[in-house]
Length: 184
Ligand SMILES: CC(C)(COP(=O)(O)OP(=O)(O)OC[C@H]1O[C@@H](n2cnc3c(N)ncnc32)[C@H](O)[C@@H]1OP(=O)(O)O)[C@@H](O)C(=O)NCCC(=O)NCCS
Image (cartoon, rainbow, N blue to C red; front, side, top):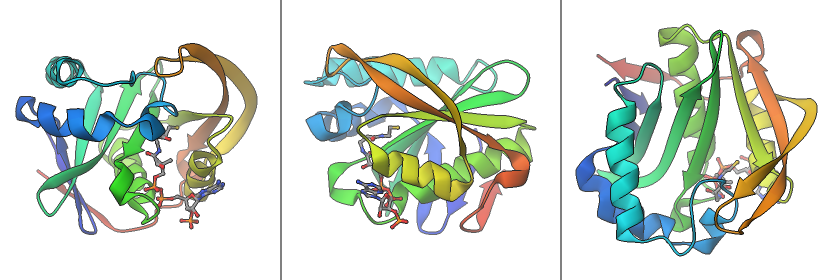
């Protein structure tokens, strides 16, 4: 799978050996509660399941889970899920010790560049829970616009549905924040 270089970050495929690190980073209520899929508490078993599925999903076109690494260590994760007609849905989280330093903005920018430039994406969608304005700020900085729609999305960690604000990004609106390289 393509490796993406974005400043001091390297985005690479999730590997089976990453399970303990994912278990450590994800067993964090402040992370899980703002995602739909991460349960809390989060065990090594969940992490093993996640990395297995991430490897299988690679075989399906357009389904990517990137480990976001700095100095050889995973600090964040971002993933895309393909929809119909060149539309991809974006998600991300950053480990608690690495927040408020531009990691999510840079990692999202890197994956969006990859999808538009390498994958022929037409539109990227994303959403955030109504009580997570930092994520909305990141999306708007990148050029996403609110679609005016919301949906109720299940949060595994909270055990309830949470109102989710939906956004979409067209290629012409993308505000790339840093230079990105790919290999191969
Ligand atoms: C939300 C999250 C991804 C942000 O990651 P991060 O690496 O800290 O994000 P960045 O540093 O790139 O950007 C954060 C931006 O939000 C802004 N911000 C922080 N708190 C905010 C708030 N309450 N309201 C509005 N903006 C806020 C910051 O000022 C910063 O903007 P700036 O770069 O213009 O100064 C991270 O906190 C996280 O992983 N949270 C738990 C999981 C999650 O929420 N995932 C996203 C699901 S949609």
